[in-house]
Image (cartoon, rainbow, N blue to C red; front, side):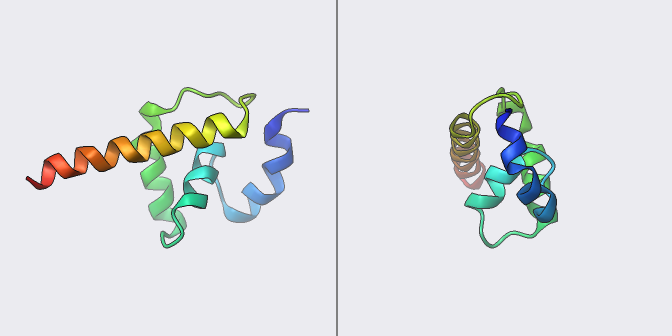
Amino acid sequence: MLPIIDMLPQMVRAGDYDRHHAALRQITTAASRVETFQACLALRRHFKAGPSAEMDVVRNEVTAATLFQSFIGLNDEE
């Protein structure tokens, strides 16, 4: 069974677009659905894992992309 099948009911209830969106939603507790979706779209170029990838791989990609985005944001503030 594909890993996404186990997560599908939870993703539908939360309005997640894909598993990367679900992982991003899980690590950003204060954001709205729309803000989380927009953040996911902004980070999409960093995601390589497909629908059959393990969820740990997806979470690692999301974490790495958010950290990268944080460092880019620090350069913009200077």
